Image (cartoon, rainbow, N blue to C red):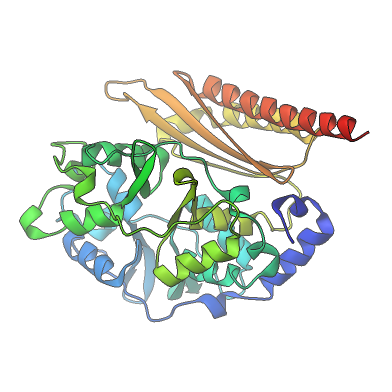
Length: 393
């Protein structure tokens, strides 16, 4: 049986990478795709996305690819009217080609948080590769499908309550840069609410509002979470394997599986987690680091932030080799200048996923605190291993 710890073994990792890259983009590429034009209005675009059941849609001008319109980008924008044109809300996602290795495709999806990536021939889009198609592929890779769900799942950082306002749930989604959120009543899981359900409701003419209103940035939507959440849920156990998770996602067209143990919500596993797993198989000399959620104004501090990250990673590397580190930055009370930073970090190291969170008014100090927490967790992990060896002796 393959486990996440086995990915520390370079020989096993190389074999796993070979299994993944025996598949290619042409196998996974969808060529019959919907596109929109740069001057198409957002209301029509959302209608097409809803009908096609996609979260990202390409924008083309004649034969030229321009970018992607994404649910995630729309929901982050302030007071975007449904008359807004595609060219005003499109994102510049990484592009791929038929020869791009699938480990690289997965990494690009993690970097951009994209659900679909455009496959290019010159400046012309010839298809897309989705997280779903990569997830289906994963269910065929023995080394990955045998990994246990508990090894890659995320603990539940935030959840909504049935009677929470929808705008409050959307604030959490935007802060965490996620598109689905579990709904709990006490300790019991009762549903999942996602951006798709919100869009499906709000795009209709009878409910016509700005996207800012949908996101709670203007006049909040007074709907409660239980009015839109999905209650017919597929769940999985922590001891189930990633192959079963991937199969459930593929067969049911879903991106998120609540992990339930003894009737209680133990965590969440998503297609994003699977993308991270595939990306971690890339042949690389350095640890893969990804930071999301920063405003343009905050990028001035990136050199100092990067120094803090690299400094602590070098200390971690003396104990275990880190494989990947993803950080998501959320900023609160930013109106009127200044803001409090909350950074959530996820570190893959020594065949284990560690998560920590730090909050401060200073971005660099917040990063420093987060990295020190992760360093302490790795140190504790090493001490537990040493103590275990002593007991065996």
